[in-house]
Length: 411
Ligand code: GLY
Image: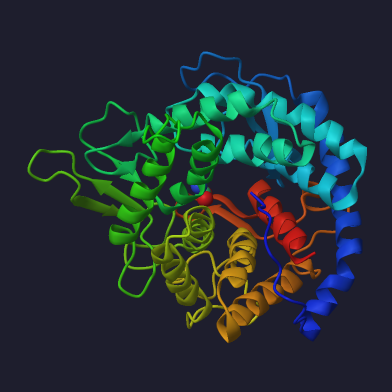
C-alpha cells in the first residue's frame, strides 16, 4: 500500500516532467474506466459462485478481469487472492481525483471483502485486506477498521511455523509433507508490520505486548526468504518446499517452477514482488540488510540482458520474445519509486528514472486501454499463470492497482 513516501528533492528529469504533465489526463481516463467497471459489476456482486472450498461464508463476487472471448467481466469470489485490488484501486482513484463517487464505491466494495479477516487457509489475506481496508483507514483517517485489520493479522500469523521461521504461502496448515513458500508472500507482511505498530502494545517496562509478535514473524520470514529464495545473482525461485522432518527442519527439500518458466529462470512478477517487498520491509524496520537486498533484486531486474528497452518485462526473465507482463512492470515501478527515496545519489536517481520509463511505457497506447476495450481495465498485456495457460495477455486487477499507486507516488 502507498506509504508516506518522502519525495527526493525536485531533481526532475525531462522524462519525469513529461510523465507529471500527463498525470491529470491519465487519472481522468482511469476514473472513467473504473466507473464503467463498477457499473457493470454492481448488478453481479451478489451472484454466488459455486462453493469450491469449505468456507463459512457466502461466496459473493468482486470484479477481477476480463474474459475477452466471452466479452464478459471476470467476477471472482471475495476469497480470490486479488479481491482487495479492485476496492484498492477505487481508493487510489478517490485519492487521485477527490471525487466522492470513488469514496462511496470504494467503501461498498471494501466492506464486501471483510469476511477474509477470519481466513487462515492462505497467505493472501494480507493483500486482500490491506489493499482495501488499509487504504480505507489511511484515506478516511478512521480507526473503525482497526479491529478487522488486527483480526486479519492474527489469522495470517497462524500460518507461521516458528520451527521453520516462515509463513506457509499455499496449502493447509496441517500438511506435514509440504510447506510451500513463494516470494509473493513478502507483500503480505505489510499488514503484520501495521499490526505490530497498531495492536496491543507493551507497557514500556519490558513487557512486549501482544502486537510485537507480528513484527517478529515478518522479520523472521523476510530474513529466511532472503537466505533461501534467491540465487547468487539475485534472481528469484518461485516455489520453495521447506522440510518439516526433525533433523531436516527448515531445509529446502524441493524447488518448483510454479508460475515461472523453469527452476533456473526468474518469474518476472515474483521478482517484482521481491523488489517491492524488501523495500517495504526496510521502510517498516529500517534494517539495512533489507535495503541492501532490495537493491540486489532490483539490480537483477534492471540490468537483466532480457529486460526490454521499454522496461516492461517479459513474463519470465528466461522467456525473451514471449508475452510481456504489464503487472510485473507496474509492481516494479511502484517498488522502485519507494526504493529511490532510500538510496542516495546516482543509484537512487537510476531507480527513479527506470520507474518513470516503465510508467511512460504503461501510459502509452501500447499498454493503456482505450475506453470500452480491455473490459475497461486500465492495463493491457498482463500474464497471470502462463505455464497452465491461465490469463495470458490480459488485463489484471493487481496490475492496475500498482500502476495507480505508482502514479500517485510520482505525483
Ligand atoms: N500472487 C500470485 C501472483 O502473483 O500471481
